Length: 287
Ligand SMILES: *[C@@H]1O[C@H](CO)[C@@H](O)[C@H](O)[C@H]1NC(C)=O
Ligand SMILES: *[C@@H]1O[C@H](CO)[C@@H](O)[C@H](O)[C@H]1NC(C)=O
Ligand SMILES: *[C@@H]1O[C@H](CO)[C@@H](O)[C@H](O)[C@H]1NC(C)=O
Ligand SMILES: *[C@@H]1O[C@H](CO)[C@@H](O)[C@H](O)[C@H]1NC(C)=O
Ligand SMILES: *[C@@H]1O[C@H](CO)[C@@H](O)[C@H](O)[C@H]1NC(C)=O
Image (cartoon, rainbow, N blue to C red; front, side, top):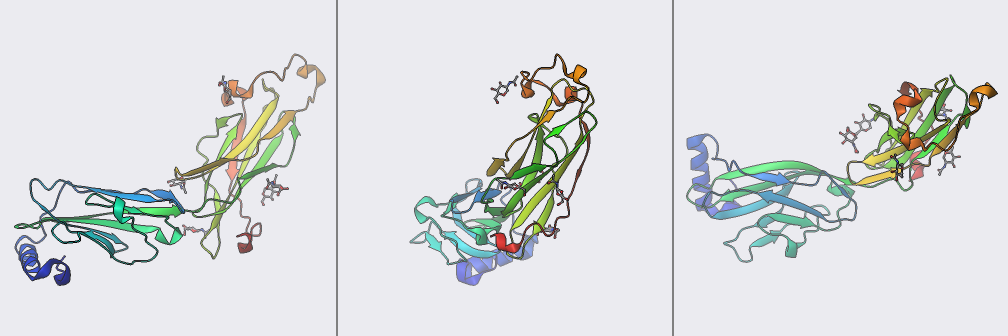
């Protein structure tokens, strides 16, 4: 804050006096930063900063990435806007002002912490700074893939399915669906990190088919998600029940739509999701 080159000698003097007298500079209690948690690579990102100067004039807005200033707005100066070359940041000057800064076509190198600093003008130079993280997402090139050890089952069978989502940045979260019911509480997955920063995800679903299920079909799929900016469903595996005892299969019908049947009525005994340790499945060379 005691930066001579940017505030000028007088401002420097007064800000430092204020620091000494009050210990800290009086804060703009109302300062809020709004940075998207995640943004897709090559898209634009809008970073917002809202504040209430309580009647005082604005002295300056500064935006930093990982503590390095890349954008400054000082209404009393001409031009009011200054852009500093930092990393791959491309500021859209026309769309940026005292409340926002727009970054064009972000790429993975722009993942990091962003700070917005607001200073009010004389006499008090109230200053505050807030920070937030932004992740630039590179999604997988293809959708997740589900495989199973079987295509049909009889009651009591142990069914196992694997879901894998190819390398992305960051790793995708995997969620399982059985007959369109989300399998609750099992979003964890095993992540494989690669030296280039990408990571792939794998998860295994294990369940035991009920001895007498009202619907003789199991539809299994998984979904891979990256924050709220990317989501893809896998292929759907359809497992048909074989009749172990032909008489028990009579009167059963395939017409019941599976999504009309709640998971609980299928009485699937969900055993666990095993986190796989499949280190050899992917090589860094996939990307
Ligand atoms: C899914 O994985 C299986 C087994 O590894 C493979 O044979 C199949 O081609 C994959 N499907 C897709 C769409 O990648
Ligand atoms: C699931 O992954 C595990 C670990 O790689 C493997 O041993 C198993 O054969 C896979 N099962 C299926 C059904 O693909
Ligand atoms: C993969 O990388 C993430 C993020 O850097 C880290 O949290 C995680 O522990 C790593 N996992 C493994 C298995 O190395
Ligand atoms: C994965 O899920 C966890 C728990 O909901 C969440 O905190 C995290 O942000 C998610 N990660 C991604 C990449 O979506
Ligand atoms: C079943 O799924 C279809 C397509 O997703 C939907 O249109 C229909 O309303 C669903 N039926 C029920 C009972 O949820």
